[in-house]
Length: 300
Image 1: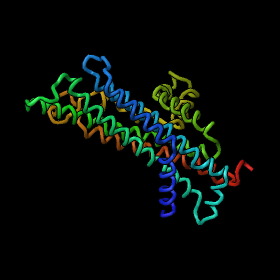
Image 2 (image 1 turned 90 degrees about the vertical axis):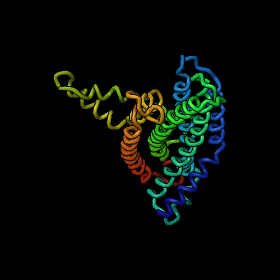
Image 3 (image 1 turned 180 degrees about the vertical axis):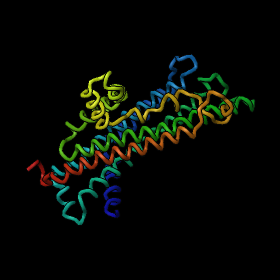
């Protein structure tokens, strides 16, 4: 375990010190700040729209930074024979793969946290304007209303940021597995295509279910197989609840249509279990490939 932690630390530092990592995070922060100042003209729903767009920006930019890190972590080290030097030490291949994967997703967690703080600050700054409240008012009722709105929106953002990181972690597992054989040129478009397909798996399960009289058995079997192999990324999208709905926080606790935080975090726990299971499956496949890969560069 100690060797895995050492590799984790080295991979984390290598990932966050890459110029592309700082560039994408800086670009993301600038985009989020600009969006935080712009009106969305949604008739009272500007804050919700800002959060929804901001979460998509975080997912895209942190995912790109993560995929660059996955390619460099294994494939390039094999090609330049750095991996051969590492494996000459008393370390197992599974420890290398696990340590590198954990280091990469820790770097992704840092990126999500940094940009998440920017989104939270942008949300706080735009709430008075979006809800037509005076931020400098001395009226306690107005100040409590602003405070309740801020807490409600932040309470929804945090679990969705965790789900965003879990989604990136699942795709990072695929990237690490692919990096045992393929460079960034193949890795990046493959994971992006998998991301698109993973978001369409919500339409596969209705095809895979139902009685045989409605659908041929072959179609049902293929639907189940594809649904198991592809990541069900819709499991990490709870925006309809965390971003677009009212949550039971402070002044909204008595709202009959508000949603409690307990079920939301319970869902995050279930999504975490699914992410761990899928990442384990993908990393085992990557480990199988890594065990059969020559470490002297190339395939031979």
